[in-house]
Length: 233
Ligand code: ZN
Image (cartoon, rainbow, N blue to C red; front, side, top):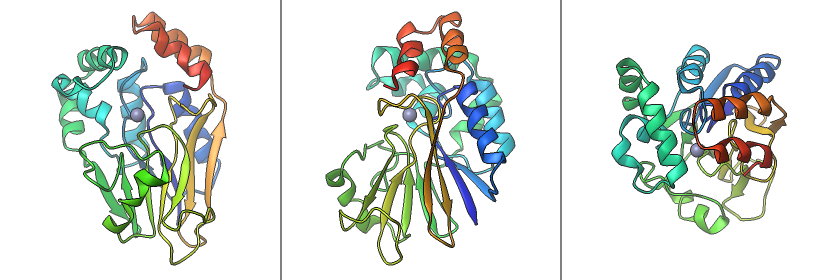
């Protein structure tokens, strides 16, 4: 089974369209979306509908949650809060109902998928180091747990050293962000995983940032949300 794992699209239709074009050119059996389809960008409804058209495996992220229930933005910075409130106004009641019912983690094909972390997945903890990752390994039995949330692609092995995926060890893999990369590389990021060979590949690709950024500004969203796309921050 060849899987594409996408996350943190953040209403960036240009990045999502490019990611799906790359995915459709490869032999992929299934797509899993780890959440934060919404928030920050100018095309929340289009992104949600496009993701729904390619997969039934969609998780809820903290920005999806906040876009439906804006009381959940208290820990957001003012730009993220503004974007959540703006997104909330765009969504139809049906779309909000759909998002509310999404799970924050799923087990599929013998693997675990979650937006933030196996530990308290609805509390949105970040895993950005081995020290963050290590308390999570005893909490799942699958060989690999795929995450998003930090927008920082990375592989954490329970033995702290191994980078290639080998049988008998546990891994937490962050696939990075399709729509708002933050590792100083503005190219979109997602993951491909082969459940038989255990081969994992992090895909990076350029997309039409100009168009995504222009739409953010035209929508009246904070300009900084457009500019950060160019910096990958
Ligand atoms: Zn996110």
